[in-house]
Image (cartoon, rainbow, N blue to C red):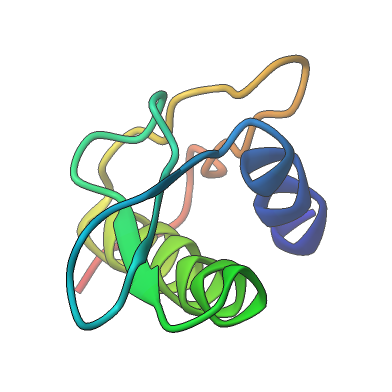
Length: 83
């Protein structure tokens, strides 16, 4: 389920070329604060994958909601305890 969510997030990503050491910039507009850079488009996409993965894990660990992307959604079970 998490893998499919990340893949959906990457399909919704927007990429730009910026003037910087790492000229490729990518973000997922539906996920606030989720962005990455890279020296190539592929590196940027790979970095963005890691950022989305970490973002989802932090939100799960804190019991925070994860917004749907398209038809993809991750929901915490009601009985899941958050330490």
